[in-house]
Amino acid sequence: MHFLLNDTLSLEILIKLTIAGTLSLIIGIERELKKKPVGLKTSLVIATFSCLLTIISIETAYTTPARDDINITMDPLRLAAQVVSGIGFLGAGVILRKGNDSITGLTTAAMIWGAAGIGIAVGAGFYFQAFVTVVIVVIGIEVIAPFLIKIGPRRLRMREVSLRVVIKDINQLPTLLEQMRAHNMTIEHVGIRDSVDRHNNRLHEVNIRLSTLISKDTLWIYNTLHILEYIETVEIEFLA
Image (cartoon, rainbow, N blue to C red; front, side, top):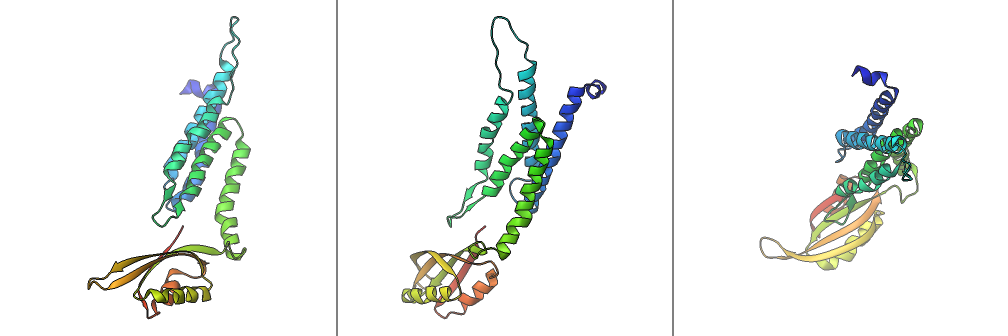
């Protein structure tokens, strides 16, 4: 270990790997706090190994000895470029499509790609740029985005909701939709299918996809709809 610390190049490599791992922890903590699939360990592994591969790619290009009988030309970042494309399979693994047609995991997938970017940037020696990038991303996700959602345009302040209601009389559906619109709910999709209760009475299951202001919570929507006499059951899910 002593000879490594005396070697300037080896010490620089250790510093790069440490910085890459430390910066990746910031992203990992942010995902961990939100209970997302990619947390501390995944971000650390991605960034640190990406940094290592970038260092190997650069050092190999500059330390490969020249030969008189052949002209060797190497791209210092060829291996790093493959990291960017190869990390895609991890990102694809966290993107999920739910039964209600909502897509989740896009931000987490982007964070995976970003963790690889941190490792590449630090491995190539862009310490300050990597640090600033992490700060910008964290501020954007944790400060700016929530701020815009609270005071921004109405569309930004709206949240998608999956609603499932069971009604006896299908002729009441237009009335239901009108009452929802009266409460500033934007109807985006309506699906209907027949069902029966335990007494073999015919019912109608209505699946509605809508957008509503974030200030309206689940309980408010539930109470608003459940008091309607023609509604049998109500099931609500806020989409991420």
